[in-house]
Every structure is written in structure tokens, then in C-alpha cells.
Length: 449
Image (tube, rainbow, N blue to C red; front, top):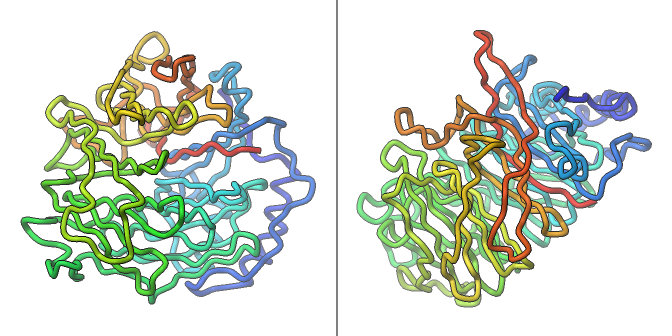
């Protein structure tokens, strides 16, 4: 595959727009409303797009690379699909430097707002959250939340974005107006997860209850009221994410919810949250929990209530689950296991793992599927496939996140929703100074057009 750069029309528009954007703010509060609809931007016609980020350093300045693939081309022939390529070490980095005074590094998680007009990129080696106009790939605003922005999750009503400041051990909120293109860090909303107390009076971070409160992934409920926050050392906190400051309404200890959860999906009134591996103390783990969303309340609950349903636990099998997605109109949850190269299929009606299938085979002997998403028609699942040199969430010696074919994987969903097959890989090639493969795809999202 030879990546195709931004079209001349769109690139020229970005260059022209940048001075206007950069002039709006040199501070950390966000951007005023710049003109961000670029007329005449030329991108390939498609019914949807698949966005995937390579975390490895770019040639310019460590910003990573964004690839945007036409979905129809991927499903026709993934290996031949040509993406639009955005060097996040270029214009996006320049915007961040002007608006925050610091440069972003290592784009890790990628989310879309509900209307798919914006992409939200969190940089895990720094504290930057970048907002991109999705139709044109133009950087609009950059906010530095502090030490480390592991994940930034937009609320379904598009009024705010919740940020997991991982090593800063802060849960933060960005006020958002996606129509106007304005975003601002709401300092008054912040929860210090290392120093706060839970409704029961216990310390939020406690050697026995929750030993390491670095937030991993915030998952906002469909009604935009609550956010479930997974924790690196185990345990979970549910917060009222509209309150100022945000307030804890449900608390779970590390014996109830195991470490390193990331991402979640909601369907049929249930919120599914996983746990996984990727840390020295827990290199391998694979668990899935279901919560009754209606049982969450702004009135705080006693510890470990409402009680979750443990759907499965493969913690001792050498598995490491990370991404998950809804299949079959919400009838099934597919959970990707990057260590075991498989998909675990959960039936929502029964909250049971009813099937699993391997992704390893002729297409890739060791795909290492990480974050995943589904096409608008539900027939295809796309997955970030880790490479031989993963930059995040890999334990040396365990190699839980190591793969052999870095790129964007394409899987066809079986007609029953309980089966699938890896049918193609769009390879992402990036070599380090010594010639070794350093490409490390991670953040991924499917954008409807």
C-alpha cells in the first residue's frame, strides 16, 4: 500500500485556515469559533470511513499519523485501499503549540462525537486533547489537561467531553459546543482520584480497595448523565458527570472489578465494561461486566452496588481483552482479545459468552486485535492490529500486545452475528531509524457519511 496524502484542495485549505485558527488562542482554554468548513475538500466518495492512528513518531516531530480509509475500498480489497494521510506532527502539532504552549506526543485514543462532525484525539504521552473537523481533517482546537490524556469520551448529547488524565490521576471535563466549534477545560468539574473520598467515606485510592486510581477509560451512559471510570489498579467509580464538581455516586473495589478496564458499550439498558491486562502486575486478564444503567442514581449507593453481573472471566488463560463493539443491532457484544488473537461473543439477552473464533490464519498469523468498531450496516468489523513493537500496554516478556501485521484489520460478520472471519489487512508501514518496524496502530473509529 502506498499511502495517499491529503488532496491538494484540502491541504491548501488547511494551510490557509491555520493562521486564522492559531490567532484565536494562545492559552489553555480552548478555541473561539474559527471557520472550519473547508469548501471543496476532495475526498473519495464512500458510504463510511475508517479512521485509525499509528502511535509511532512521525518524521516531523513525534505527533503520530492518522489514516482515513474509504470503507467501501476496505471491504473490497483492504490491502489495496489507499487512505488520506494526516501527519499529526504537522499542522495539528503547530496548533497545539500555539494554543497550549506545549507539543503533543503519541496519539492513543480516537473518538467521534455523536453527529460524527468531529474527531477527538487524546495523546497518551502528554496531556493534549485535539479536536479535528472530521469532514476536512482540519485541527480546530487543542487543550492540554496536564500530565497524560489517556482517553477522551464525548457525551452523547455533545455538551461535554470526559478526559481520563491517567498518571495525573484526575477525571476532567471539557465543555463542548460542536456546532460552534468551541471547547474549554472546566477546571471546576475536576475530581482528584488520588485524594478524594467516596460516598461511603472511604478513600478513593486505598491500598486494599483501589490501589492505583489512574483512570483508564471513561464511558458515558447514553443519557449523558453518568460516567463509569475504569481504574488501572482495579475497581470502578461511577460519577454524575453533569454535576460541578463531578460527584461519585457508585464505588466498586478491586475485588469486584479487576484492573485495566477500557472502553464499554451500552445496549438494552445494560452497560458493558471490560477489564484486561497490559501492566506489569497484570499482564494478562480478560473479564466483562454488565451494569443495569437504570439502577445508577444521583443519590449515592453503598459500595459495590448496583451489583454488576460478571459475564466472563478468563484471567488465568493468557488473554488480554481491550476493545468491544455491538453486533447484530445490539444482540451481541464482540470483545477483542489481543493476546489470544480471538473474538469472544457475548449474547446480550443471556449475558453469557456463547461463542468465540480465532482471527489468526492465512491473512495474519498473529493479528493482535486491539480497539474495534463496526460498519454502519453491521456487516463488517474493523480493528487496529498491533505491531511487533507496541508502544503502550505491552509487558516485556509477556508480549501481550505484540502482533506480526501492524495495520487495519477487516473482518466479515457472519449472518448469525456469532461468527466472523478476518478477510483482509490494510498494512501500515513505519520504520524507525534502524530500519525496524515501529508502526503501532491503536485508536480507531468508524465514521458514517
